[in-house]
Length: 512
Image (cartoon, rainbow, N blue to C red; front, side, top):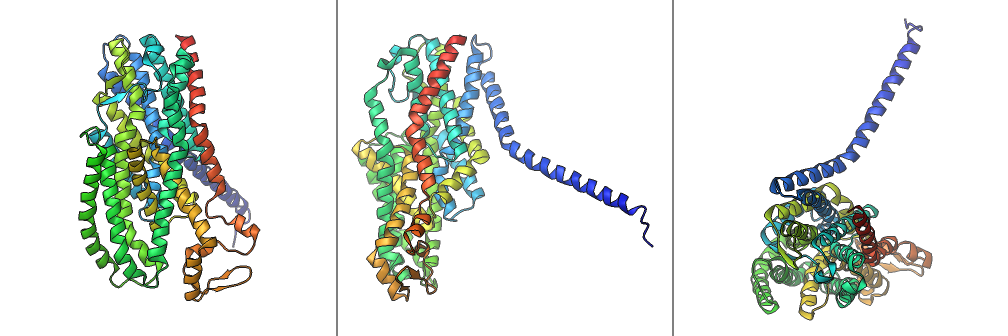
């Protein structure tokens, strides 16, 4: 017999326990969101302590310690934003998991920074401002502090809104703003600034065109061939060899430039050597991989998985070798100026400064990088291994072309521009290609007055239906909202960082 007198009490107790469970779950959810910022703040504190251990007894050690914390903050933001361009396409194409991408990028970013990051950097960021016009060492230190803080804050904001931006441009904007605030507009080398502004257009346009051309080649010679496997055995080894040669030349000119001085001609010879060797090896590998494969696009994608993983690692190594200077360059300049009480155009980077930069980039990637990785790899346009391969190959080749022609280039703009190029080319090709239409007709796809019926054809390009003008606009293969956000962030990076830097410099000047 049920005791009705105690039943309401049990119901009340159960409800109270359920409330406690919900409160605990909510607390756990909120706490998880605070883990990454908490670890980031801990890293800033450790960087300050680490810097303090190397500056004990120096009269103005507090300035170096504060600069080390700011440099660590900058490194975290570079890792959170810029590295996504290296591994995002491979993750979006499902060639590697997000966890695997984070591990590979962190290891190779650190290796690139510590092995090939170089020991000398330009303190005035590529001659943008005249060091003689800045004035006293104290003014120069405040200018570099303002440049570091402003560029780090801008990259942090860009990461928050989901826009991959050029960290180099952010630093440039910070240096320009602080330089103008400290010494006026005449202190800026406006010809250099014109070249940097040109890279806003040159980098994404060239990257997009190169990526689109490679995707057109793959579609024409492999995807829309009746015997896909034979076509893949003929052309995939050539594409892999081209990637190997391009990356060899890319690393020779960019990733290893601080270890060995190699001119462009020698780099191209190195690339040619890797091309030949890789072509012979790739022929054997692709033939073995393709044995027993079905004659369909899904089978072809497996042939591009390994090259994508390798390209992500190599891009991360080159990025660590080059862009660590964006984090530690101004910091190294501050350390030198404080210790020597003099301003110099080039300074040596202490090992402890390089360690802070390398560790910060890797930690920022792991803690805050997944958001931008998903944006670059999945949200701008849909990528598969073949499209992601075109993006990675375009990034390496575009840098080599730009170096040979003396054009300014941004690796971030190039990689994201390549993704734009792939997506926009798919839109054009889907709507207008006669070769694609003829291929689908051979496969039994029937065209109707208002659209297509798939008839079982496994072709992702059919996702863009031609049912109506409104449907075309709704189902664009490149998400326009992301394009607008990213382009707006690119255009405003230098002026926004400059204005922010000028304001911070004026505040520091008043405090001093």
